[in-house]
Length: 179
Image (cartoon, rainbow, N blue to C red; front, top):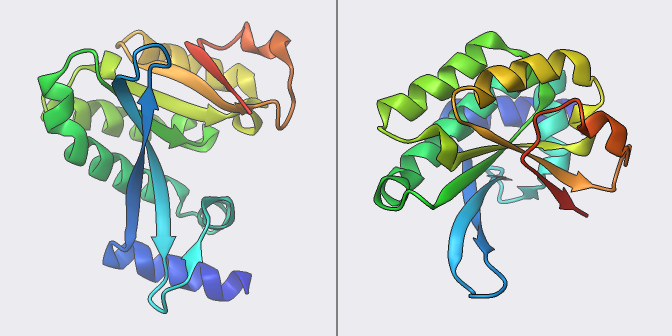
């Protein structure tokens, strides 16, 4: 099944079949919308929905992870550009892996896309799962590079993996999303 899905994922990436759904981020007190989280979704050609916890590891295993991340970043920024330009307080959150952030070309790609679309880095939140922060020494330097440009970082699903507050002090984290 992994081989078949891996091949199908490669084809789906080539055909642009991955898409995004946007989960609203709402302020509890006012009920106002202040941002969205871009969530990757994949429906195979035969109509099966494959959840991200299955296709993201497949993409990483087959060397497609950063290619997929670039494509999803481009889609998310493009689809949300108008809203982001129209409201400086609104933000877009994008889920990434540590491998994405450790890739200098990927970091440059994200920043180039943000600039190309006339967006502000402070409106872009890069989210990492708690598991992705395990090798935090090299990751911290990469995150600091982007943070110096204005990007923010959230740790997603805190409480599902290492649940270690100590390492968070070494990473330039803006917020923690608790599971």
